[in-house]
Image 1 (cartoon, one colour):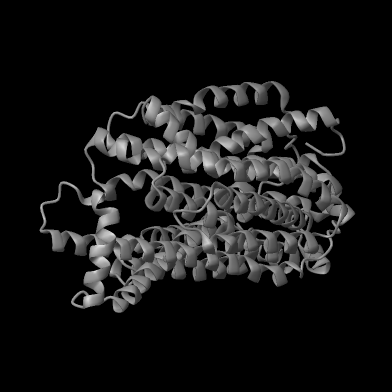
Image 2 (image 1 turned 180 degrees about the vertical axis):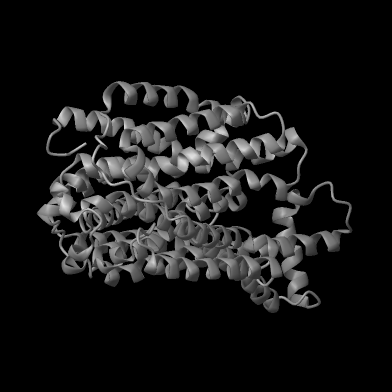
Length: 532
């Protein structure tokens, strides 16, 4: 596939096929969470066991992503994409038919083997189909599904689980997967691999990278439950650090490295990798913290919460193509910095969110945040892809997606830990104002008990003890609200810290030799260093 040889209708038709598969893969990473309690009941497992339904998917996805660059060179874009889509769809069917807990986990691993490859190879196809001066618009349209999926997942998952059963969240992938496969087979053109060098597989580098990713993601995802100071978490992070150091050592001397370290000499690629973490915190600051706040502190159901988050997803969907068009016309630094500032400011607005906040206060910052994320993602992806040789686009796409995956796990763990600690701090501080043995606490307890005693009906306690329990409940609720407010504020400040970094992005000047993919540039990275 070469972007200059294809007509517009072909490119945009292929784009729609890529978008469908990418949306399905991203959607499935978040749609499962709301159905986990139902799976626990079906298979009779505990919470720690059922978490492996999501953990196995996350780990497998992260491990398979770095292989995409090498697999594209061996199989070509069409065969790899459709194979990944077939594996993902087959895995979805097996998840729905799962007859035991073990079969469900194994089916999720199979599903992730396909899903983990769909997103980076899809991004590679888009970059290959469109010339550098059109990639901003193209990647903006493609990324709409990537940004829309996490917000839609919990709502769709809750609806399907409530109205049908948990198996339907997997069956819903089957018709769309079949449609994308048939369309891809009929429309997408096969790559011409004859004459291309067959690069050997960097097995040693991949092994150390897999160790680093698995150890790090396990530690980040289970740190809150296991305890950050536990031997288990220390072991995970030690393995991750050792794997990362060994990976860098191997890649430095490998004749055909999995990740050519020369890519990081391209300033735009390096900045995009760093800002992937900032973007993940901004994305998950809304997608992760807000639903918990609305369900646990406001009392909304999963579907009610999803409906209130839908405007934010729609905002992203509308703004991504617009941001993409602007990316093709203007330098990425200003656009990305604007996106960081807007997304960060939207999260700062949630620093005043409480259970009595109006619908406008809940929805308004989400719309603003959607605009900011769109202006972050499109310029960053385009600048990063245009900064590397054409022969390295698949590798760059793979590791940009790995960065997003690791950044998302880090963002969730970071914010979850911070909010939990903040709630404890506020509870202690509020408790100091009302010592349980003081006259002030007794007065406070008796006063609030008349307002909230209905929440404790059926509990056999003396009146004074019940009043005290209600008072403690009110203190903890206020501490929780303040803890979440602090979490939103922190996420906003982190995004604002990305503004000066984004200003260091260089104007996209993709070398013509790289754009044309001339043979003499294959496997060489000297031009990257010159461009940086």
